[in-house]
Amino acid sequence: MLRKLVEQDLVQFENEFDTWQDAVKSSYDTMLKQNIVERAYIDQVIKSIEEYGPYIVLLPNVAMPHASQGAVGVNKSAIAFMKVEKAVVFEEDNREKDAQLFFALAALDANQHLENITQLSELLMNEDVVEALKYAKNKDDLLAIADKFNL
Image (cartoon, rainbow, N blue to C red; front, side, top):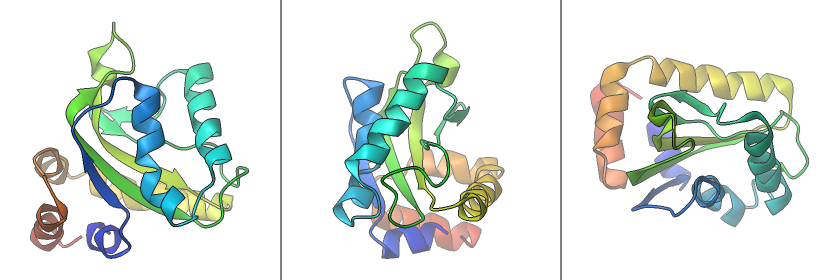
């Protein structure tokens, strides 16, 4: 899966963001450039987080930005990866909700949404992979992780 994301140019590396909103927007930049999603979908994702809290932070340091499947502004199903050097704070009083690894999701329908989540769950269940991703600095590092863990 990681190799596929690199080959599809759906990965990026950033230093830091002033707000979690900026980080979430940026996590969709590669998809926006490829017309996989439109700005309206990204706005929906941010609105959902504002309404329901940081439900997108699945594990400490790992966020999976998404809105409901089949949401307005999704042109194709995809996953994009973004690594941020300085952890993004979602809740000042709950640092368990900080995140450095972002896996942004876009899905046209419920089946593809479930498929995206299943692929990511398999990857994220491996603590060694998550730990290696924290230290990735570029696409070559991602490819090395993909080779090491057969991803």
